Image (tube, rainbow, N blue to C red; front, side, top):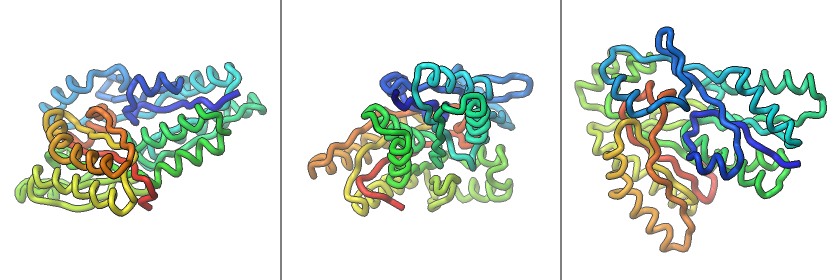
Length: 296
């Protein structure tokens, strides 16, 4: 018997990582009028091109109970325990869906072992918590230790990002119209992060190029305070060229510095954020990283 993971689609882990740890993935949905599309079936770049010409944004929805049930039962039928890992419960109803299905299954199968991990974030910050739990599972650890591994990683990771415009946050109701107009007039770019499961503003600067420098400075600050880096990934939403430039100009020198100090730092290819998260932010560049020691 082993521990196997059921994950959602908002972590943007690679297909290789998902296959390596034999994870089951269930998709959140993008809802556009009468159209419901599974995020995993969508072409993100095409979606962002279409989104740029609209004055509104689609909504999103958590995975279906049926899909979560099917994934959990498949693992149980193989004789394994289930660890469900989700986007922050404060950002989505996905955790509640996983919890409801888990309780239904356990009522039907009293011997079933199903536990959940709320990763308290999204994107690769969620992904790194999942990878740590999966690594523990692959090492034969019991489910409690897999959860603990994920929680330890949550304490050692940060996700910071900068949107090109406040327009998408305004469209989605994440920021008031007056604030968006003022921000645009002053060319203000917010520096955003995720803390305790919610998006927060860390800083604001006057240009997007300055914002990228601030993101890199935050990585360097945390790298020093927490005794180095373990892994790092650049995210983008419809800004692949900017993301690549950010990686080569700012982050690769930091990684080289860490490696010269004897640290083994894993650096991922640039990762595009999918439509469920990206629709609410718009064009953006961000970075997710895990440090050696806790950040909080």
